[in-house]
Amino acid sequence: MVAQTETPVHLSRAPEKQSLVDAFVGKPLEGLRTPAMVIDRKLFSQNCARMHKKARDWGATFRAHLKTHKTAEGTRLQLNSEGDRTHAVVVSTMMEAWKVVESGLVQDGTVKDILYGLPVPVNKIADLSLLWNQIKEHGGVVRLLVDHPDQISLLEDFESKQEIAQQWSVFVKVNGGQNRAGVIPGSEGFSALLDKILKSPAISLYGFYGHAGNSYASTSLPEASAFLSKEVQDVNLAAGHALEAISRLGKEAAVTQPFVLSVGSTPTAHAASAEARNLLSQVLHGVLELHAGNYPLLDLQQQHTSLIDSAQISQHVRATVVSYYPGRGGNGRDEALIDAGAIAFSKDTGPSGIFGEVVGLPWTLSRISQEHGILISKETNPNPLKLGSTVSIIGQHACLIAAAYPWYYVVDSDIEGGQQVVDVWVPWKGW
Image (cartoon, rainbow, N blue to C red; front, side):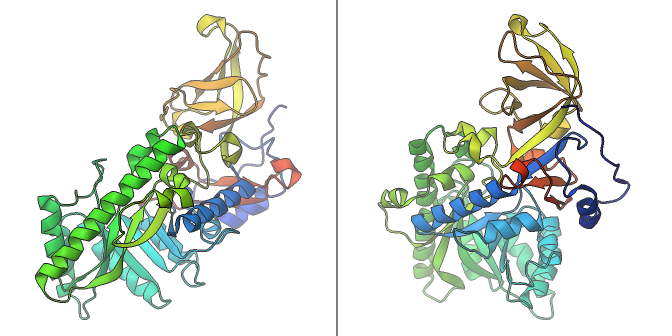
């Protein structure tokens, strides 16, 4: 079908949800201006319930990362599903943290525990303190990640200037060899940080936090399970060192007992199971917490791990064919030009080396410029794509794709076959 242009929405200011709902809910997907990001709410919800079940079967609590979709609606589905319920989240920006509060998610008890997901920066301490003071009124807590002794000194200096000093609840960020952030358990840097924490009046040690970013290279369940086991070993080793340090100090230290051992990425979280728990031979020096963020939406990168299949991916980008080039591609294959490029998809290619797969058609997104992309046919004599027709494309990295869009069109595969807009979600933009 040829795409029709919908009534324009004024874009000179941040979009308001109600105006978008009024403009688009009840409208068919066919005809929306492209590029457009579409989320299937039913699949999103099922993915959330599946992850809750994974955590429960593995014998862990769950902490939901909000960084992929950054919406109030998605957060509610992540925390309350048919599988289970949690009140703990991770945010990657202060904007996410404040919007969690402004959206009423703390006030109504949906969110009670907010972890700021970067090692605490000096220019965010005052903001985080103000956030914590606000959510205390509703029984909420803000937790921090630390991986350097100077971060403790900065928190102490800040608290020394307050009328009423507070004790910050912190995770030590553990480096399991990924070298993204964190300290290596048993290293000189780890020992110095731990000593500083245990002697600090401004800090309460809550637990140890790992993230196996390298697990995205997994291509099988055994590989992902091995990454998961390594994550647990790393944080557990860190917790063991902490217990020894507390014993050496010979005095009470401000700690949470048992420690919370927080691990996870979407691939390793998908590997969590009762069977995986049985593979953990070591005695745990704390209780397990599983965290993940990409899992409600999913993408080609996650599909490549073989831990999910295409039917679970709940997001896609709609684009319009604007030109066609018969035989121009390699081996005489046809190419087509679409109105979605690097801004709409990012430049992540993943292990497959492509930027996206067209849903239901033998075409891939093979090359991209800033605002347009080139589709190439998988077949030498495909049915030509008509100019003005729309295609649905699954991209490589849902987190970066979602960041490009001012709003998401939400469908439900149980309503009009998922071809009608049932809601509009407006993500939280900025830092």
